Length: 101
Image (cartoon, one colour):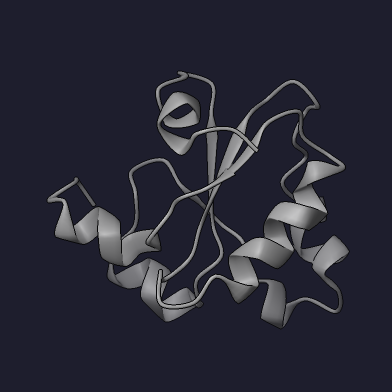
């Protein structure tokens, strides 16, 4: 993994929000793609629709209270993406920093 700020600063970075649908609907990072692993038959199926090219960096965003889901997503995506980062603190930290939603 690399630093999240470096990945977020790339114009082609993809932000994958793995929070539940209602949390995503309540507010998310502009341009983020919603991925719902819990509603898919498998994690592989949940991320299959993302169609990430190997050279596109991505950032995984969760609620920020526990890293369990984010770590699992990062591990899964490391085999599919060159650069994968986790937004430390998740949406809680993003909101706290006053970043746009």
